[in-house]
Amino acid sequence: MSHVKVNNFKACCDQFERAAEKLGLEKNLATSLMMPDRELAVEVPLNRDDGSLAVFKGYRIQHNNARGPFKGGIRYHQEVDLDEVRALAALMTYKTAVVDIPYGGGKGGITVDPRELSERELEQLSRRFFRRISPIIGVNKDIPAPDVNTNAQIMAWFMDEYSQNQGYSPGIVTGKPIDLGGSLGREAATGRGVFLTIREAASEFDVDLSKATAVIQGFGNVGSFAALFLQELGCKVVAVSDVTGGLHDPSGLDIPALIDHVREHRVIEGCGQGKNVSNEELLTLECDFMVPAALGGVIHKMNADSLNCRFVIEAANGPTTPPGDEILFDKSIPVIPDILTNAGGVTVSYFEWVQNLQQFRWEEEEVNTKLEAKMVKAYSEVSALRREKKVSFRTAAFMVAIDRVARSVELRGF
Ligand code: GLU
Figure 1: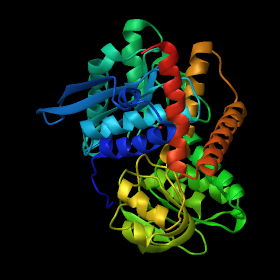
Figure 2: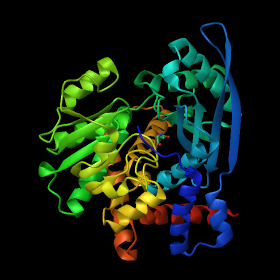
Figure 3: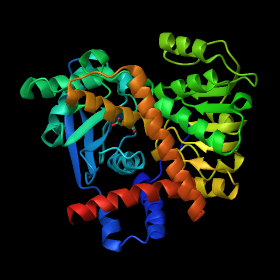
């Protein structure tokens, strides 16, 4: 998938600074809110199946915990580096503040392409990584979760590592399997949150969802659930893509059939639907909602001008670079930012943690209703500030978040 590897943390700082300036935030406070509290880099050794030894780099960055324990996922990807994890950790601080859940922000990752690992290798790498970061992890300290290429099974291994020493501690990670204290509704939560964001935007901007079209770039957990919920409300999903390329059908793809195909074959390739398009072409397709739901940096200065949509809905973290953002702003295409759009995942992670602490399971309907209330409120607060201050959705979301984090820091004392 074509994307530019930008200096992610710098991009995040640019966004932060724009909002901090609008808020009139004191300079030293602004710097302290922007920089991570703690950065841990680890070496993770792995005995390969062929008998050789490999060593991978891993990270856990704790960005800010003024409002609650550090919280955020762990990503396995060959492009993971310190700078990217730092940016993603910062985004978590603002994301948890936008939806007003009592968490700070953190992120972790291993620089590895997990497709090259066997199941046994994946388990050993995951357990060893967790052991190496465990001195700074804790139920009230820092709570990991899934992110790109990590899943409920990996969370189960993390939980097992921790519980072997500490006793049964499901609250140490979220996004676990249901049998080990995972929450009903967690798997679909990020996609559901993306869908709720689109629904709220459609209602504010008078877009009839039953006549609207969406293009989804990335058909993993987030993209596939978002597509499913959109289609259920009558919105036509005219194109989707993954690492194997894209599919386009102006009369709308059959999303449940596509999900079944991906469950079996892991990729959308070969599903027999639509006409093939490249990931680059996909971004230029005409639609109401362009939903980048894969990796960061896919909309950038070289391609932003060719977008042909009414809204960009950032389901992935950091899909639009700052120069790309500016071009979209000039084209009057509203960009609903990641820290709002994809906050449904961490919101239900919070509900999962609460259930673990209560040792009580909620019904799925309760989870979904509470998620909806959080997303609707966050959207309306961000959009109200956007209208009042005449700023972009992104700046407004950062303003809401920074204001909340700053208040907690000031109340706790510098
Ligand atoms: N990785 C997800 C995110 O970026 C979820 C994090 C979590 O649930 O803690 O928001």
